[in-house]
Image (cartoon, rainbow, N blue to C red; front, side, top):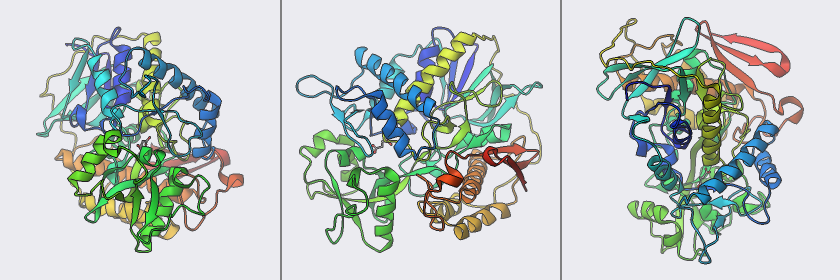
Length: 529
Ligand code: SIN
């Protein structure tokens, strides 16, 4: 393949769906810093939510999504997500995507937290992401879609009109390459790797958000981070996800005294919205007690959850004993790069889809199993937009030796673990001003600035630099929002403050090397050092 029309950075479900939609018309290049199999979509155990059950409706799914997101969403975008999602899922079913079925051949629809209906489609039990990714990968043309693996995009290139028109990458040996195209799409996922406890692949550290911010894109809702209640806890650390579908099948949460910890917390008990369950487990564990998922009521656990069973066995947790030790961990970023309904950012030629984007659908907390849905819907919608706008190019891919040195290489003075521990301790499940300010102070003490061009010695340093940027944006945002809402819980402001904060957003942008924060609701702009 000699030319490329569209470069997609990242290789999850949104990226593959976009490539699938575009391949008849365009040449597509997908650049990923690891291998296709190592992203978050591959790990997704939970399924795809869609209102396709007989008793279900778009309205009911929409209501659950809005409620889980604490009404911080754009309602018309939520409606479109669910309407389009339903149509896409139905067409996947019709084209034979491998969704699990009951003995009578009908689709098996699961239940998860904060859903009022059975509407979760799964594949291979708890391997939905992997099955769906493989289904999409098989549909891609080798002539029209090129994969560039193990190259990390470290800078977005803009032309003299300010249009995004390329990317600079480093391969695993730190060799530099440039690629150009008229459309650059970020689909790099979230920020789980910024925390020591996460369900995400450790390489998912917010690269797309940092790249976009440095290029001048707007970001918002960065304080809203979902902590999944149930990660497997073994040997003093979290080590992989125990899907919410396990609670959907009837598992209950007990402490080591045998008390059902969700009693008196929420009428939905274990199936309450994730932030409520995560906070409850976190508080219980802070009292020095362990928390377990009691799975005794689930028949054929191994058959229903093969990859969770394998995970438990790898960590010497016996499924037969009926108790899986759990602890919460960072799972999903609701905020990100501000986009319109098709994925356009404020920079011409630059788009964002999937978890890296903040398109107004998740609000303060994402509803379970709405994320693969988001990837499918926004991948398709951006595809349609690009086909309609019909821009083509004959840009040649530049030589791998296109090296330009743009300044003195900087080095990073901290270790990733230091930053991650600070994030977990101060910008984790429960936050307060004192801790947030302490972490911000630590971040600001680092001799780093927002750079136009990146010139670090190694990929490892670029990773750390990007983590520093995203950590700073999250911490500043968490300090601004003096209320608790969804995935942002402040011990010092424990209530939702609808009068002061409902739908109010902070928009963050780089401004001449400094951080600019716009509060459109209050008509206020602040520039920070
Ligand atoms: C889960 O299986 O619990 C995670 C799925 C999701 O986050 O939607």
